[in-house]
Image (tube, rainbow, N blue to C red; front, side, top):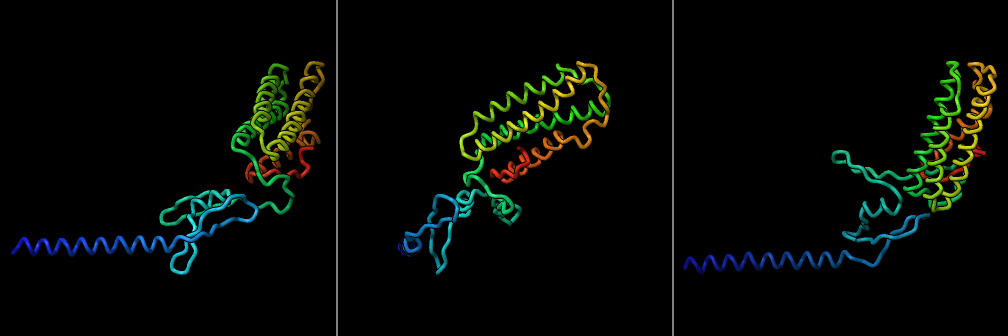
Length: 224
């Protein structure tokens, strides 16, 4: 008798589980609809699920579609989207590739170090020797080749032109002081204050840094 009661209870539980499983299948099937979600200005689409009268998409898929990123802070999920630049027009909506951006940032770091070293030496009255400045020039020229090789999108290729201008201007400024040292020309310690070429290099560096932060090419004329 006891075994029959246990068997009856088992059958009841099994029936309940099968019914619950059937309900889940029906609900899941009802939630699937042939709808897709797109973001204006971005290629690609993601599926939409409709449940309880509302439409839902996966946040991970949404972040990828909008070229954004997700971060998690405790119980909060933050979706960060690329900033829109409304002050200047962008040449390409495709933006910079990761490989190009990595190489470009390295190149800008070398240029900043080169300029900072030159300014410090001039202000302290140190002689600007050819060997000293050549080490920076060769590093920057090597990195510029890597930047050119990494360029694939239209934005990448347009930025290469500006990075090349920045390199040429920095080399021109550096060569000026190297030549002055070779000819034993006196160099004032404030020679670089309000220097037009140095100011152009600085402004171009700021413009390139802003582009790297936004991930989009936006030529404001600072690097010409």
